[in-house]
Each structure stands twice: as C-alpha cells, then as structure tokens.
Image 1 (cartoon, helix red, strand yellow):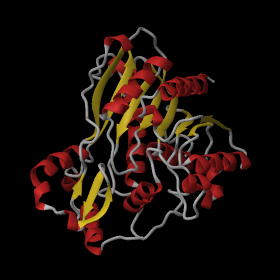
Image 2: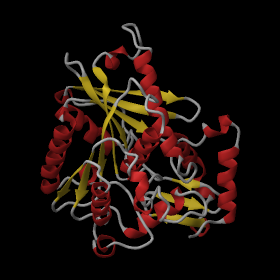
Image 3: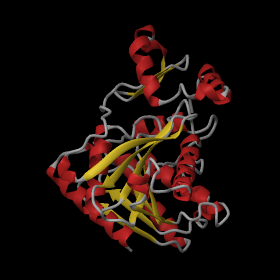
Image 4: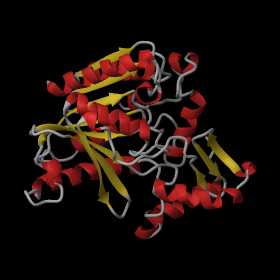
Length: 361
C-alpha cells in the first residue's frame, strides 16, 4: 500500500490541529481553494488519482474537479416535496439536506441517508443525489435526512462514522426539544422519531452499516426515544485483499477495481489494508452479531461489488440475522443516480418499491 510520508504527516497535522482548523476541510472550502491554486500543482506531483474525480498531490494538496454539479434545494412542484439544508455541526461543517413530503400527513418514517463516493468525493448537494432522494421521498412517503459528512483523505475513517453517529444524536435532540415555535417544526411535527431507518449507497451503505454497529454496541437507551427500525444498504462498498469473481470479471461498471483500491488507500487509517473490518466485515463475523435490526441489501448484477454484497448477506443469515436482498438485473454500480437508460429507469422504480415495502413492515 502506497502512502507518501509527507502526505501522512500532512494528514496528522490536519487531524491534530486545533478545532478551528477542521472548518477548512469541508468539500465546499476545498473547491474554492482549487479554483485559485490549481495552476501551482503539476501532474508530476500527483501520488494518487481517480481520473475526473480526485487528485492527491505529494504535498497533501487535494483536487476534486466539479464533475457533478452541486445544486440548490429547488425542486419541481410536481414532486410535492420540500427540501432545505440544515447545519448539524458548525465545528466539523456537517450539514444535511432534508426532503419532506409537502402534505398534511404526519407520523412519517425517517430515513437518514449517506451518499456514495468512495468516502473521498460526493456531496448531499450533488444533482444526481438531489434528484434521486427527492423522487424517493415522493415515492415512498418518508422524511429523508441526507447527511453531508467529511471526506477522506483529509478526514480518513472513522470520521464519516463519527459524523453519522453525531447526525443521529442531533436528530434525537430535535425530538427532545421540539415545540410548535421551533425553527424546525416544519419537519419535526410531521415525522415519527420512533420509526427511523439508516441507509446509503456505495460508501454511504458502508457508513450506514458501521454507524448501526456503533449504535448497537452502545447502551440500549443511547438513542431513545429514537428507534432504529432497519438498515437499507444499496450496493454497499466493501472490499478485501482476496479478489472475488465479480471484481475480476465484471467490466464497464461505474466503479472499477483500480478506483476501488484507490478509494480504500485514501480512506483507511494509515498502515491498514483491505482486510480491515471497516472494509471487509467478514473478517470478524462476531461483529455481525451485534446488529439487532433487519436489513435490506440492494445489489446490482453488473457491479464489481456483487459477490461481496452476496457474501455479506450469506454471512448475516449464517449468524441468524434477518436480511432481505434483491439483485437488480442488467444494471451496474450506482445505476440509480448515474444511468439514464430505460433499463435503469425501470430498475430504479423496482428498487424504490423494495425500499417502500421494507419500511412498511
């Protein structure tokens, strides 16, 4: 595994700097910095790269091209969904984009969602996620809280897990302190805080899973009155040192093996490999036993992660956990946000139907 010593020192500097420094590591600040300084860095200084998505220079400088536009909360009136951004933590720059059905219906379930991007790229404001989650909110009739967590390599794992747990604690506080005059009453009065689901796609699925493990390892009343009812993992991003058949054989998916390996090198703690439990949950089967909630796993037939996702489901069943899974035929990784083909559109509707059925149980 390659890690430049100078780059590692830079990461340590970020991680151990006083708290005000952490406000400089948000994705939005990085983008503005890149527009000013990108000409000072040359291709010869690049130590890690996923073309079009991220470049890491040996001095620790990070480039993230704006390959997917970030959009405002505006939505088509036809969706009948209200969306707004809310700050969760000013210190770490964590915020969430909320999607709330524009209706008089109350007692709505809550889906806390984490976007994908290999832990290194992506945003809750990306247009593809904004469109997908608004449509999901409208289709299944739930409140969605899409968390914009910190990104690696500036904030390697477990930073996104920390942010996910903090998002749940923040959600709990909104229930405890809600009142009719609250600035958040436009959504708090509509939802059922005892009917909460965690979900995400790709790296976001990995985050949802690891946040759930943390919750289940805490005291039973840790989040009360919040009640986590289930996990919804869409093509969860797992890995391992030994290659699976789908990793070796499937080509043409949005996620390829080279990009997958690079994401893990950038996201895992210094010195760890792909058999770390955060990457490969099957190396510690006993940890699967702490999960006390049912799971829905959505798998894509043409995804390099297909075999790992199926092995994950088999392992859950082997330790007596309730898991439902669906393999979506003819589509690849992240088809629900990246592909506009007719087959993908059909599979997106099918996926949303699966999610709705799971949340209605």
